[in-house]
Image 1 (cartoon, one colour):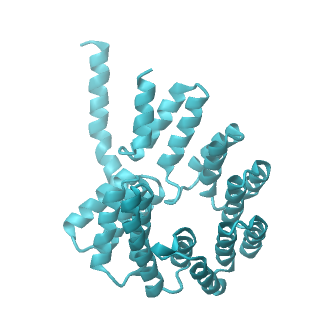
Image 2: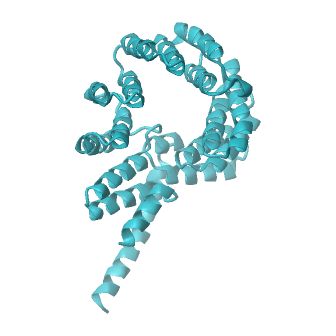
Image 3: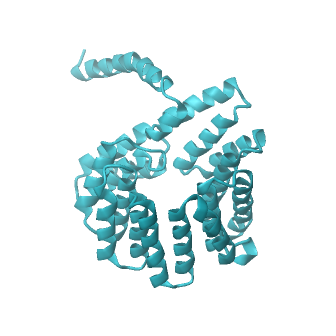
Length: 325
């Protein structure tokens, strides 16, 4: 037997031995924890098994929607969220996620398709707020829709201002963020900056609010101030999810790429969250390494991403690109 045959047989044996152990490990974690850990493939498999056993499990349908949303599979995400809402129409959280799924699909659709989807986004967000008026995320998402959507689709800054007023009693920092969006929409950059800074103060300096200010500086091409805000956001040892967002902004603006790589490594070494999937961090780190000419290390990061989310098309395409060289 040749050495290559020995290696192949050994690898096959290890796969047979380790696969049940990996499945058992995944089974010990809830789908929500699997999503938070960035293990979207394990989450989807677990959820599909649960739904097969209990087709009327609305919670599993909602989590499946969120898993597909992370993978940018908009159609599958919408379908799962629709099922969750159909099973529990009085659950505001499920309406919120369906609205988000419609919104992502709209952002990646033709103009005519997006117009119809935008109305569905508004309807679902409004339902989420109606069913749970104290849901800060639902009110914030609805306000964001009102700011961005034209009047013909049900948008309007006056409606957003009303949501900011309602948010003031629930989450003052979020209310300031909505007012900042309104000011920015009105091209009043000075007022927008004041509101972003008021949000930071109201939140007690939470990293997320510093990142909101950094994003504002990015949009207004104030890159030195953007980097200063990112440093504030990433200095804290809590709310590690901002590390991925901060790295992404630095990559988008081509500013301090070594710092971006370090932020991604810090994030992957920390406790990850669903809003910032680990497979995306691996992909971004791979893209940085590829840009620096380290294709071997980049390929490994793309493989790391695909080990968590095998259908993640960006990593698939990147790995094919490297393999063609």
